[in-house]
Length: 316
Figure 1 (cartoon, rainbow, N blue to C red):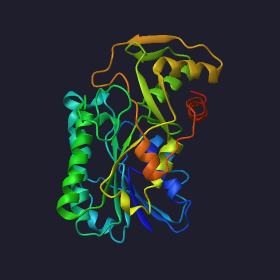
Figure 2: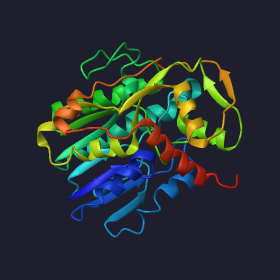
Figure 3: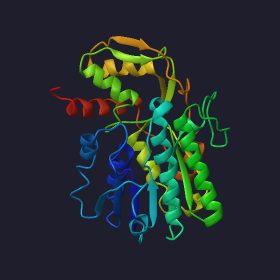
C-alpha cells in the first residue's frame, strides 16, 4: 500500500510515518516544507528515524506550489496533516499563512485527488472547531470556533465535504483534542512549561490556570489514525480523538513538579483570546468505529515528554 503523509516532519506526522512503516507492505511518502512554529532543526530531528528507511521517501515541497499530480501517482491513502497550527498566533497580520496553508493548500490537494482514485483521504481537524462547550462534546455538536485558526480548520472540513459530494473523494475527518508527548511543538503548553521548568524559569500560566483540556497522548492518537486503514465504512464520517483523562493547567503543573521532584514558580499572564475554558471529547464513536481505547495516563505521558525534552535541552 502506498501512503502519502503531508506534514510528515511535524509532531503527529513523524510519529504516524513511523507507525505506518512497521507494516512491511507499506510504502510511505512524506511531504513537508518546514513551515510553522517548529524550527527547521527540530523538524529535521523528527525525521531522524525515518530517513534511513528504504520504504520511506521524503519530499521537501510546499503544497501551495508543488506539482501534485506526480506525487499522487499510485497513492492509495492520504493522511493530510500539514497545516499552520495554533490559536494564539492566528490573529491580526499573522492570519494570512493560516488561510494559505490551511485552506488554499488543502483545496489544491483535493483538486489533484480528482484525477487519482484513492481508498481514503484522512483530514486532520481539531477540537477548536467546537468553540466553548459544556460537558462532553460529540461530533454532531454545533460548530462555533473561537479563533481564526479554528475557522480555517472548519473551512477545511467544509471543503472536504463538498469535494466528497461533488467528486467522490473518500473523506474521513478526525478531530484531535490537545495532542501531547515527545516531539510536541514548542508553542504548545506542555512543551513550553516543561522547558521553562528545566531552565529553572517561572512557568507562564495564561489566565487563572483552571482551564481544563482533554489531553491525548501521541501514541494513542497515532493508533487511532492508523485504525482508519482498511475500513471503507468510515468514508464520510467525522470522529473525535480524545485522551484517557482531562486535567486543569494547574494540575498539569503539579504533575510536572512530581515528575521532576522540583517545585515550580508560577507567573500568571492574561488569558489568550480564542481559547475555550474547557474541552472534553465524547469518544464513543471512535471506540465503536475504530476500536479506540486511549490507554496512556496523563502522568505517564507527561513523564515521557519530560524525558524527551530533558534530553533535547540538555546543557542549555
